[in-house]
Length: 213
Image (cartoon, rainbow, N blue to C red; front, top):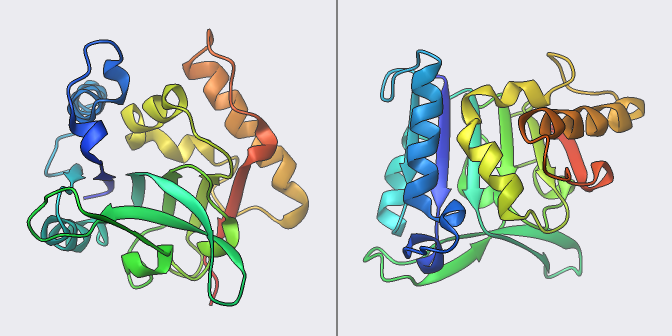
């Protein structure tokens, strides 16, 4: 498979909400399936959507995700300090084999994507730091993320269109340092195109980084 969503919802995401379905995990999954099908892609052959409610499911799904070239990570994120006082980003994952909503925060490197086929990782999480991802992905892998709160209206479009997220890349390569602003503006233009009635997320809050040796 070429494309994957790794979805790590918490109990609020899984609960049915008749007033704001856009954040409901099952709703997003159906929208993404429908969007991919319209483009002639088949689930299980061309792409996979992996929703992990327990630590056991996450471990199993990661084995499949590591084989894909483009991955969208649907998870809650936070900014925290490590033991040395360095501020970095963490990802909220299921922490129990039983799936009883016990959660734990892990550094990106703990997802074990370093030895994988992933070439582009789009992190649909709040409060991410570029430096936290450079050693968490294969060398040369492009990581696109957001450093502030990523509101549901933006997350929804990324999830639904995950099979086309290469369009977030301005070129088919990683950016040089002096090109960062142009890449950030390119991402904003993508949002303006797919959601013309919505104010796009601020360009400066996006980061584009690359896995390092």
